[in-house]
Length: 211
Image (cartoon, rainbow, N blue to C red; front, side, top):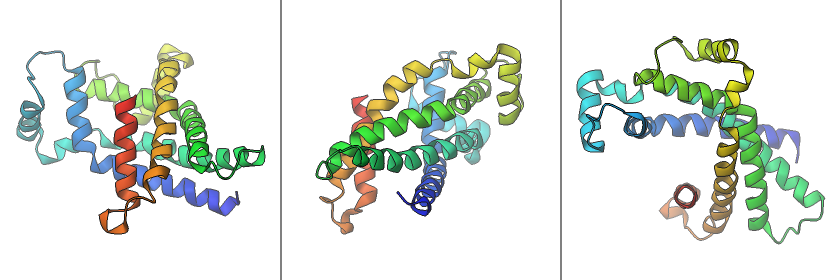
């Protein structure tokens, strides 16, 4: 693939990831609180929503989003950049052009794993900051970059890769299925029904449900 085309995919992946992550930040914030809350005081999503609004205000739904965006921009940039690279590599080594959808599955899986390996330390930092935000961990680090520097200094460099194997086991099928389903649905959904946007949303839901 041409270099300029690759750069477009990298830039588009990073920008789309940042916008999408910011749009769904309120949902992500509620999900994180629901998953890691240990107080027993939260009884469900309907109780978490008004509590955030009451205690932190409307913008409390976006609290911690900057850390998530700092992680998702390089992740999505790597994923989309390597997706095109692996597609061209599969074609180069004899993968039939007629099997476009199957090629998307293998290239998507490889791109997802590659992106995770490159950006995983950022995900560890994001998770650590999210736990601090909810009081699960003592607030030792005041910001994303301080945490990124401080964790390997305090706990060793290997700490930034804790859980990488399990994450890769989930990302490989998720990314592969997502890109496969997207290529299947894209020509089937008319522009009036959202076209690629609807296909992308459905592909994400199906892949997430599967894994």
